[in-house]
Image (cartoon, rainbow, N blue to C red; front, side):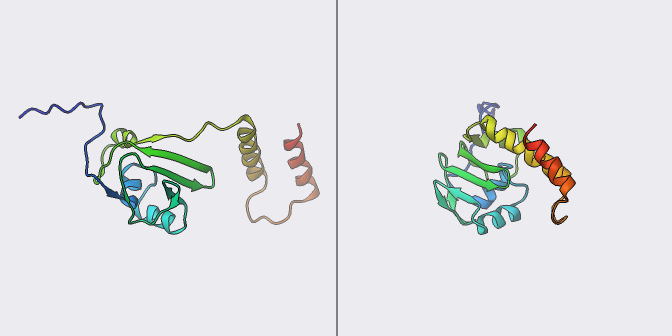
Length: 139
């Protein structure tokens, strides 16, 4: 029998899938256990409500991931329970996160620069380090 499925279309799947499984399969988080921990820490929302790992997600649901880098939102386009190639996994979701503003981009740049200058846990900055940080903020 020949397959009439379009290779560019996302793979067909079940009607619902567990949230932690979907986050792993869609490559939104590296492993299922990390997805479970993120749900337990209230870092994942489905349709605006905090979700547990066993929440059943459907096509059209909106997922929001909160992380140190900010908040990213996705809309589910297709479902799959098994791991698939990354190129196909990217077709399972559509990112709807708005583009960062120039101010946000500048804040990220400054944060990275300060992090390189002052490693976390290094204590209070010296007078010399504070001046260098101030120079970065106000060129």
